[in-house]
Image (cartoon, rainbow, N blue to C red; front, side, top):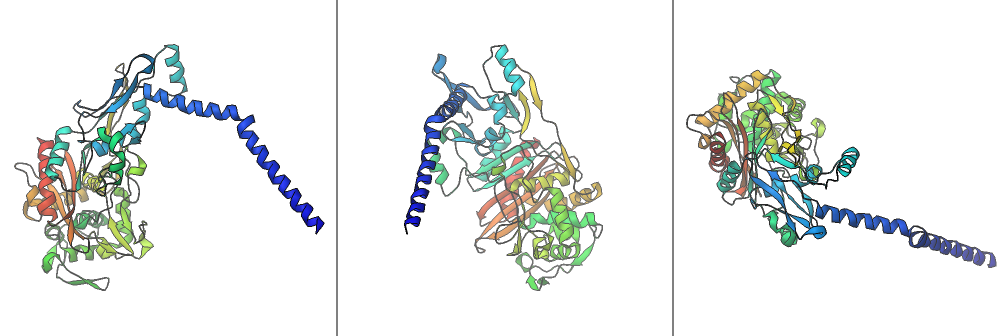
Length: 480
């Protein structure tokens, strides 16, 4: 008994001694280090407030973000302001000491804050220069951005427009948005708002694409060599797909029909058969080349982007072995084993690649970085990601998509004197009580300058009646 008491007493002494040692370490022996660390953090915070961030400009030179001085002398600080208000809120993000950063302000922070490497810092000190951020020229078009927001008319949704041959993002609109000037005061209310205005629907969403995904299926089918635009399949409705009846929109039955006419009229039963015949491996391979399955390669924060792809009921991306219904996935649908879910940016990348002879370019928001003395520190060049499909397949698909706008479901996007290649999509959501409306397109067909994706959340209309007219408005603005 006495031996157990002695052992417990010894253990208590050991634990007490350990506590004393570690407490003394932080409060006595390493107190200078702790104070130095806190002092360093405070100094960095003060330095950040006293360093003017660079301007962010639109492609036409319009100032989108600037730093305004407060106070004088050694007490002078700078506060970010956004002259265009909420026009580019979700893509620009914000930068405030008390609220952190988001959007382009975060992904390009080193440039905007004038962060230098060790050699640059020493050089600046020798010249007695104060640190100053570099200016950023973006690829964004204010007129087209305003046109997109006006055309959405307050509806929840997104518009993304890209130059197919360069990857320059011309429009990235997301509604509802917010005024970044109000972030310091209204951040708590904005971050808890059920409408999620701080959420960039262009990059962070996971929407069912509806029939716009048939463009991906068509690309895979044509490039596989198994199909041509005039290949004929049975467009009867309903038709058994994976043992379950699948119907065309409105129950329309077409009988024998070519792939071109099946895309023009968005015939579900035909494209589901195409999906079954090319198989999941071929479809997934083409999807991967388009950029599915990973975050888009955009100069934008990774935690503000979401990978598009086939996701199961748990939200995980699935591969060819996932056991999903390939027929329904091929038409932008699916089930618990796997459903097609996409972001507007991803669908803009899809249609841009088709318009660029089958070659996908890296999307980008930044044109160049310019130092305060006028030196161009970085000029972002167009970057090719890779070939998705052959030029022949892309040309064939472009002609098929032109038919959609000329005489099919996308006539509301037709432009006077300019040929448009497009595809509509309408996905039922909320237990079939509302729709996710889509339209994707590129124009002009013979020399594509703009690729666009438009989507609207929870509308009672369809892609051809709701999203296509918005795309037309933005295309008119960008094409003049």
